[in-house]
Amino acid sequence: MSEQTPFRPKARLPRGFKDRDEAELAAERRMLDTIRKVYSAYGFQALETSSLEYSDALGKFLPDLDRPNEGVFSFKDDDGQWVSLRYDLTAPLARYVAENFQGLPKPFRRYQVGTVWRNEKPGPGRFREFTQFDADTVGTASPAADAELLMMCADSLEALGLKRGEYVIKLNNRKILDGLLEQIGIPVADRARRNVVLRAIDKLDRLGVAGLRALLGFGRKDESGDFTKGAELSPDQINLIIGLIQPSIVSSSPNFSATMASNLASSNTEIGFQGRIEVDSILQIVKAGGYEADRIMYDPGIVRGLEYYTGAVFEAQLTFPVTNEQGEAVVFGSVGGGGRYDDLIARFTGQSVPATGISIGVSRLLAALRARSGTEVWATEPLIVVLVLDKGAIAESFRIAQELRAAGLRAEAYVGDSGMKAQLKYADRRGAAIAVIEGSDERARGEVQIKDLILGAELAKSTESRADWVKDRPAQQTVKRDELVSAIRAVLTRGG
Image 1 (tube, rainbow, N blue to C red):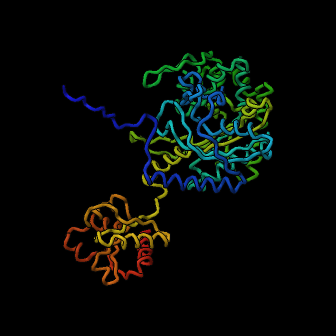
Image 2: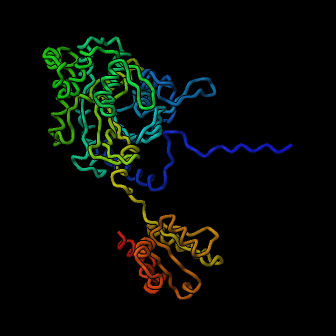
Image 3: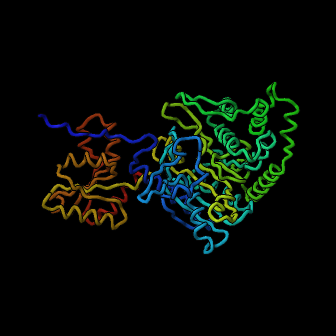
């Protein structure tokens, strides 16, 4: 009887997840440190909540209720209770505030960075595991709290290197949308239908007006053949909605009547009027702070998909094109957003607690910046590899690496078993900037060799004669052992 073939799983990642290398992690760290400095400068304090929450703590605020698993990754723990990986950082904050309400300053202002998970269909630049950086103000209904978040977000994007004109933060108010829905005959009590409409509007940038019409009507089939049931609104209702968010498109349509235009302009609902007042108040504050419409502007098409928003909603968008995986130039779109959620904490306490927050999608923003530049947006610190040519004197190589680290440089001594040629190849693959070479002869003379790997690679590309390259050796030099640190600094300075 032959032995059974051992099971060998295929090495693969689930869709919507990815591994990240040193360069990406280093860039993300720089990005997080930059945002953290801005948030801290505004007086927000750090908080870290658990990655897992009881699923009932997320409750009705789970996204896309028509999807299996309701958009989250969930499992039962050993006592039979459902637990979920957090979908965002806001619902855990609401639970934290409810637990610690009496001991917190009011308003409570916190920032948090962390990984979140979404059991949704992945797409270009849209992952199921990613990093968010949030800031929230809890305990005040003042429009000043919303305005401050918008200004802080703009400051953060510019601190990350974005120029004015490369981004815009758009503002709307869910009360205006609620007023519109009330106007067209969808009552507040019909939450399910309202949510279908709001989620459809939220997809305007991605699907266009034709896709929005389909989702507001009978439904839409996407490229994969999946069908999404629509809100089943009448053509007049659809025109009124599109007229609010894209008035120039609908007003030029022969089906857009003067009566529709009059209804759209007047917005006779009390809640819609209240929403417009709140938007005006926020815009007045940001304008007084020097943030004009080129940075923060009103856009009636901004919805935000989550159900828990109750007032102001905002979205940070990039305006420059990037090249996608198919080589096509596309506008990357949203890299952050948020809004006011005055009813979220009340679910735990029964007491209404006003709150507002904004989130920067760090993973998505980093992907956009990398796609735009074609290179790493923040390089790692240059690496120095100390070669080990004399196995009996390996401690000397480690001593050199320790000396370089003590001087604030990033250095490692080679710990493999290969010879000099393979060690240099290893240093190249590591992306090292410099190789330090000290054999027994150099050690006896009190010298060490420095090889500029980056310059050497460039020269090797342009040198036609290997003999000339060896004779000139412009990327390699011998220095005194006690001058090693200063010599390496000089090489790094020349290399930028």
